[in-house]
Length: 359
Ligand code: PLP
Image (tube, rainbow, N blue to C red):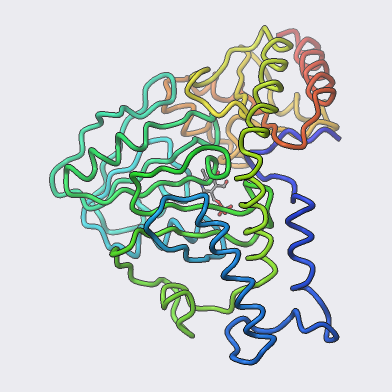
């Protein structure tokens, strides 16, 4: 099986797994202790959580705090609902974790349009009275890198805070330094599933969503998992140390895949893009058939987030593709552990399966 779905999730780095193991121990080693307990094993677990917090903070802007959550989805809910905005502006290509949370809030909602390249304008108009603007760093479907620092400036000039969903960018790109809140997820940067975080700039108040024991400075009650925190922290530290090396590897894979898939149209900008994301379309392609013919290649329909719903991707529609074009798109995602030979084999299989459809 060739795994090419790195935007959906990444493999757990062996180093992250290793960092988790002491906190998954049985009764003999005390690694199971509650990190909120005052006794010695509890304090040891709490110390591991704080090390992880620092490792994650090192991937994020300076001058804020990291609040652990169960996922980036929860972090984004905390940021949006916890600010109780009365007027909110979000881009049309945000993840459902932002779009649906914004729609479910009682805030008046403005949508920031995207051009055909999949980019939100750096000088997007932010209406007066807007409290919060949310634009993602890297789009999960088409990989486009948004001008988030410029949009943060516009938001601030309009008197709004800026929230950045950095789930697909954290550990790969420099942090969105102009943001006031940043959401990240461990499982998109080679850490474990089931943990995310919200970075909050100092001085910004939030109302908690989850009430109880008052953990995470009162912002997110519930016992933390030292194993998940340690895995997230180790993955973050590794991503920071390997950022250049991982980036160079991805560039080489991208160049090879582009060369081997010449008959496919690229969705989204070729340049202002995370190159581990190749979202491609081919006129008349039956994506469901392609996926069932390619059982040994794990990739995604271009409409990953809407998959199962039968609806074309809101992102591909937002960049001006027709329903038909959106439904004939696929997303190939690669990363640290993808081998050149794997890309070569997968491209050959994908081309052959498309040719068998006569498209
Ligand atoms: N934002 C983006 C851009 C994503 O790609 C995802 C995951 O697909 C999320 C948010 C949600 O992350 P999590 O799986 O941690 O809830």
